[in-house]
Image 1 (cartoon, rainbow, N blue to C red):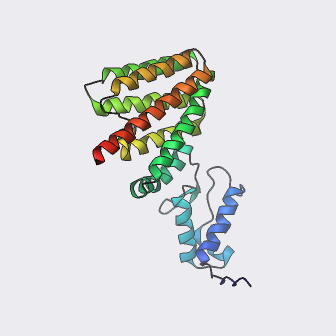
Image 2 (tube, helix red, strand yellow):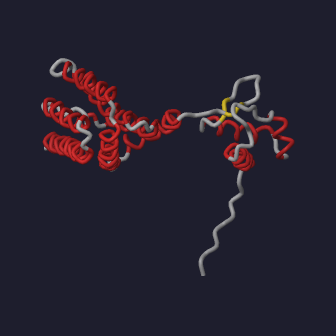
Image 3 (cartoon, one colour):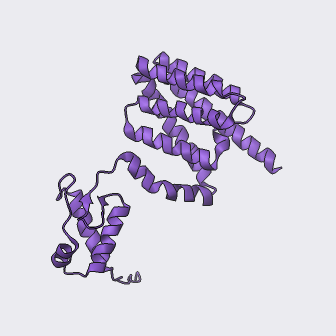
Length: 241
């Protein structure tokens, strides 16, 4: 016989939170609508002020409502960038404390960027090509002069590729992943002593996008990211020995 699980008693604020969240998600409140007052919610749910306030604070932390002192809370309209910002600190904590997250982030980046560059090669227009050319030119200008700005230009090149897809989620996620790599695993973005290889491979990726060569762009990007990972790991082994 399977041992029965104990029934845990939920906090009243959890119940209030669940109900308000359901109402928000089902569109009970219109765009930029005001929420009921604390007193109205207390009466409607038959709970005290602490339960209402705690539930409202949780909704605010999720970016679903905005609370201004002296006014009723309003329904918020978080963007994808806002959503990513909400998880940024948690993601940085994971990367800082869980070593296995490095490989997982590497694998995710390869999978993500290979598919993304394929779309960019299919969709790129002259203005997009110009932006990539400018990003690559900036990166080249910082070669042997400013490592920090060289890496920033590297990130910009990849972010522009994401923007070419016309998919805001891809662009925002791309920027977040690159920022996390830069903050915790900068060796994956700046292969010290191999900067010229980076520029050469970016040129190959750009040429494939210009030619609308989806297969070539995807393979070149894969080779580029796999090589960076191989260099990073080999340098890490040398440093440890």
